[in-house]
Amino acid sequence: MAQHKRQQSWQHVRRTTFDVTILGGGINGACLYHRLCTAGYKVLLVDQGDFAAGTSQASGMMIWGGLLYLRSLDLLSVYRFSQARDAMIRNLPEWIEPAPVHYIPAHQGPPDPRLVLGGLYFYWLLGHFRRRSPGWGKTDMDGRLIRNGHGLESLHYEEGMLRTSDARFVLHWITPHLTPEQVPLNYCAVTGGGYDASEKSWRLELRDTLGDDSAEARSRWVVNCAGAWADPVNELFGIETPYKHVLSKGVYLGVPRPPEHETTLVFEMGNHGDAITYSPWGPISLWGPTETRVEDLDAGRAVTTADIRFLLEQAERNFTGPPGRSDIVSLRSGLRPLAVPKSFERDCYTLDISRRHRIAQHDGLPWISLYGGKITGCTATAEEIAARIGRALPPPPAPVNSGARAERPIEYTGFPGLSQKLPSAQWCRDHEFCHTLDDYLRRRTNISQWVAREGLGRHDENLAEIDQIALTLNHGDHDKAARSVRRYRERVRNDFDSVLERL
Image 1: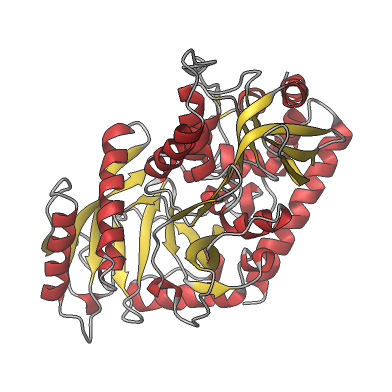
Image 2: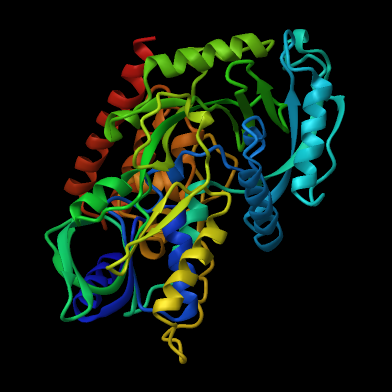
């Protein structure tokens, strides 16, 4: 059924002139797709990989108001992020929940905790007092988890947290919308094209990276939501904007979650005014992120031994029983695309760069580029872009699809070592555009993040289960399934095993 749906989608692409094509199926592209589909536009969403396979699968799961930007007095960003955070908590309670946070000041040196508390009250004010008021009190950890040098008290305040995962949050915006005139296609590369002035539409050359299919799509407008890849996409079409991206790599370690770890902890690092978080997520705790400026897109996504050493050293400083190399369950690495002017050449710490997004609308062509953008504020960003499109191309008075498909009940299954129930591989294959082992183990479920060695287990003890999942995803084709498992194991050896072995 999944193969048939995909073939149908390619046929729809050939037959339809879309109102808008969105390039990039991360959180911002997905939210915009939902917004435009709901308004009744004919929309094509394409991603060269899987949906949410870039930065949107590697966040800290926090929906936050931009507290760290108070240090640079970027009050506008803090205000906007705080408003967006509260709107998302209010409007999406099934996906986002209020989350208490404990801020642990450095045990020596400035800043004074009283000064930080004052900053938290100002942060609360910028959020219009909608979250729980900040304060100073016990950590409830009793020194069982946190090194006693920090003391037994901390500052506390409230943010928001995703209930499931960042990747599933992206998918939930996409999956309800699949009609002949609203088409999401993952594993669809844009290889070229241009603007046809006589037809007043874009011609987009598309290639199926999973098979032999190809098509030429037509679209009145194009929105570049490719995130860290936005600059190369614009170069492919000769689009010039006033902005570019500076890239910062953020790495998290997934480690076994201690029983007493129930609240997100934020540790003041003392360097650059930076902080590091320790967040509970299912059976693991996420420790990170790093903040490293990178130039190369592909190399920048890889976790290095230097990244891991830095995080383990920080854990040694802060925890009574810090995790070691053998405790690492999973690795997460994502690129933060930071919007800067085209002329920006400063060699600075990336935390000093504003996290505000920028929307660039081409003067002579119906093309919009999004620079920057975060999970916090994704819905507001989608509204802003949709409003721009609406001024030039009003939505149809009789929407082609004013609503979404009725959601089908999810079929659940289990996995060795996990108490949580998970969507089955067959259900994800048939209803969630799931094609590969990475799609299922990393983005449709959290198996590769919650079970050691990306789900294989410390000694490949889950290999038989992975084999069966591969067989399901490949519709019973044993040869294809075997090849996919070999590729998966090889990637785990290269990206996980070999990196830890070099520590």
